[in-house]
Length: 433
Image 1: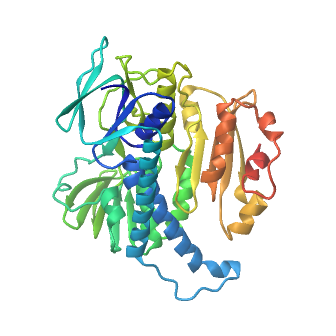
Image 2: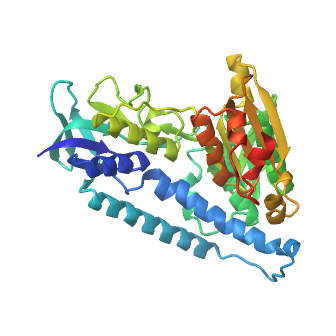
Image 3: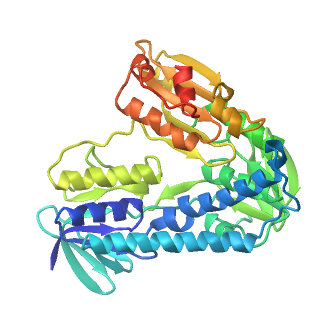
């Protein structure tokens, strides 16, 4: 059998491409060597957000007196938190399997290898000692955890996100290498549950790539809750429960219970280039998701997959990266979309900044007793919206408003004329404009 489309990798990019292809009448086969849903569903986005919501619920219960509610002897049960996470993952993986069946996608469990990708014939794939052929191939093989070359690290029983998500005991002290999204979300989770958390970051601020000012404000909020941050610092050696760090030539030793790698992820294949329709140098081979190395975000992967399948179907709508939201699901949340000040300065583009505290939103004040937050809006000289950056709950839910506006290249006055429901936290965007 010759398939219209073969897809390697069953994460957000892979299963999105498979479902869309199948529903549009393309004979489709999807190869996945582990579990459908990829890293995002099994050991990334969904499980981490499940844990973080449990931690947020626990924190809210402990702080309930602020809202006139009395809760005594509030405790948590980590094994039950992990069990609930596993239940949710199983449910959503089953949902992906159901989608594949509904779209008539053939799912093959096993490691797939391309044996022939010539441009003038069908592409041949080997999996489970069988050969498969397809007219088009979409590579969605994802990313893997970065393991820094730190002396002594490999001899240590360190955690990646996979081990941290399955752990059922709270470490007394947790050192997190890397202050990116992965590191900061786990720092927030374990801090709420009582672990002494130490974050070591080589850069001068956490969450590189996001708005630097808001990242600093979030770091201050987390520091108030007991998280220690070592910026401009690198881990130079690990020896059991002893970790040696260095800043400005000065070294010190930290005694810890566990190490968690939060230095990020890297594409499984490096150096892969794609055009605006996600095609590689072989026009019959596409690449989507983390493998492209652009943002390593599930929502980016989903849109890339849609662009690839639409192109195969003859709809030439190019991929746009100008409004890719980034969210960190800490408490408080931080969310950004569009250009940052740092990026605009490097590009030599002039801009204007408008800022308001989140407390200008009545809904925010009602739901975030003593909470802090900021809405920052960046616009061009002609009033075009360039970037929106939010700190405060629920930034993850309202950033989409800004994303749509930036994607549509709206002027500030145009967005300001839109009627926002009252009272909502989302009104802060209109208030800031």
